Length: 244
Image (cartoon, rainbow, N blue to C red; front, top):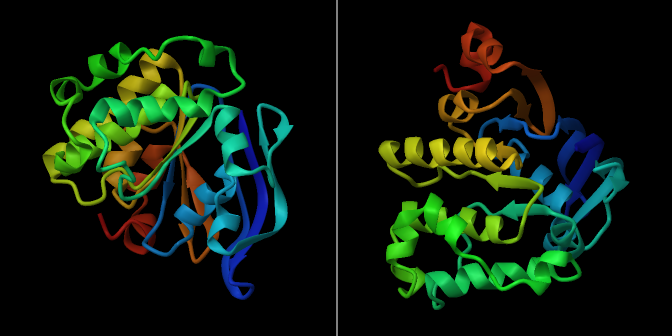
């Protein structure tokens, strides 16, 4: 479904960010993208989603194919409308809008698709996230960190995604909420078939729900394999996963 091959990218014309990065995501899979802060995880997701040029980033080489179509170089709105939805690190929600207004705003990604003609259906999101249903008329700026992350993921679902790119969903959350959020990601994948590429520093939580994993270090893929391989290899743990 998503095939990223030999991506080279930098920032500001000189700061090297990615060197020959290749990642594959099959239909229905959850794939983990692991590595320490600054490894290149966010840069890769922004390259795929078309956002990198908006941050003075430059893609020097490589290809990105989504459902067999070459999408590298497409503007971000076109990538989103194709069904490849990026959920930002730090939960970029509209704090002055209500929860339901945030969800409604996400439907602009449906422009040009058959779903755009339908009235927005919030029920599937509220079924997954009952906390949001209870706060549908509340300003999003008053949500807790966990609720804000649910809203970020809920907005992605409103855009009828085929693939969700999740950037650091555990960031700033308490351990109990991290477990809850990752269980919801797994449930979304199982119930809807939406494929997920999730970048996070929490190796345990991410690999626990993943079918495959890649480890980045200094802009390169240094290891990849099945989750049990990455979690049980002592060298991997010590060098790339924080000695877990």
